[in-house]
Image (cartoon, rainbow, N blue to C red; front, side):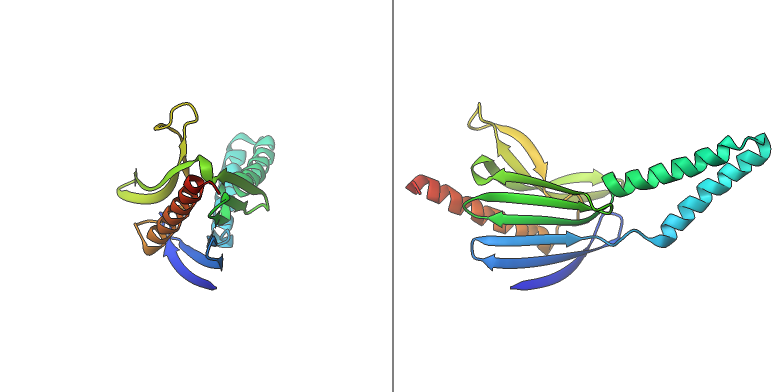
Length: 190
């Protein structure tokens, strides 16, 4: 079963959510953000190059134009490869663990797998962004040395939603039910 919903990110951009249910114990959530805007790319590039041309007319040094082209290209490649996330996928398998995959605009993919036994809890955390309070999901990992301690807080989606929405509540409910099932199976000895 699959369904789609749309939400907003913290900057007001549209996000698309796809929920896929492969089985009762295997669910996937996929958040997609809009592609890079050609209009924004053109505006930034023209602004940098016009500023460089203005400096060139004052200094009459052609290295300024070459540096502007070089900085623009490096900045764009860095943005596409390290910052602009096109799609984030969260795969939850009750008895096994959680796999988080981020696909960047350059084609790079980053995948993290967390065993269900290492998960202490899943929470909705809040943060202040500019003049807004935003909510996002976090996984609390158990500290191996201290049973009641938390070793790490892992944010689930890098593209945060603007407000506490049905999406956050549903993913939290899915995580919680998966943790309960895993803890039950561990207590029974399966």
